[in-house]
Length: 481
Image (cartoon, rainbow, N blue to C red; front, side):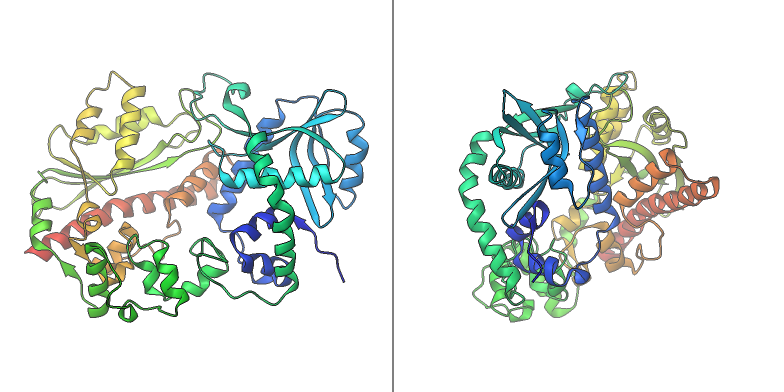
């Protein structure tokens, strides 16, 4: 029988979902491939890892191979920093990000994360590695997690000493360490047994995000109840899948009751008084606007921080008076330099009076406020932020709820529910994909034809966002007419 080797990643999967762990070893072909967004996050992690290695210029990277454990043993004797060193102990195997020699025979273990804070799963990760290393005979002095310093502001070249910071997690890891052996034994039992039955919230702690268990939730409208959270899992585990099947004494808040009623009746719930109250806040001309942004872990431009949202594109639909035809204004930055100065110029299309509308406006407001900080002479930017109104409000407050929203207030759910128009058919359908495509178009090795194709797709997507807001507002006006 082929030996079972639990690697670091599969160990973490085992802690979150036993079925996913079982699939990793017994039916890996049934696990969906990572989507583009997840792949981009993984790639960003690799980039942070590459910068971390620059802190140890004398370090040696162990190449991945079947013999990497033995190669690691040879390099340990040389007492130099090691990257991707491999260790095996019993059924456990891990590759470490950075190992640094200290004193005469000890090592510091450093796990590199693209996060801006140390999380519980990072501690579990490091504890597993410490278990593996010490079982293999290594003396580990301290365990650390290297994370991104989101207060670092780029000025000129990247200062990696400021970009990354190290937190000592030796003490919390020691607390977790005794659990590792028991967890591994439990997971070995899962792998060697039959396919586990899913117990949502228990054997799978994050079912909606799990690539295996999320499929079992398709068509289960109980889990779509607005902010029901973990309470949903007890219902599903008891065989209750539909809102119509819920016990009558199951307590729901006012918004959840609206949602339940809409789903059972198949009709939208409309609170005309609340919608009219929102509409009274709007003053013409109306400016519907939307940013597309990038937020790289490694700042690309001076005066930017890790993960700061940098706008590279803006779309605006302008309605000067009731029943007027919307005018469309858009800007997409073409060059590899900082797009923010040009974005500020594009925003001058927003006049000095009238309402500025965004959907989930906290995002756009934060971007504008950061533009204010960067360009203090452009004082008119503050007027835009002050005049912002959020088209999300009627849907977040459930003044309008359509069963086709499936518990979501996202414009990508609201738009088709109210108008029948959707984002399906667009080449770019999500903001995260727009960011990736912009980076690829601007900094990647792509042909002129490919750049033009991406450019057209970006303009279509961002323009759809503001056109969607126009259409949604019209639907609200119609609902109260």
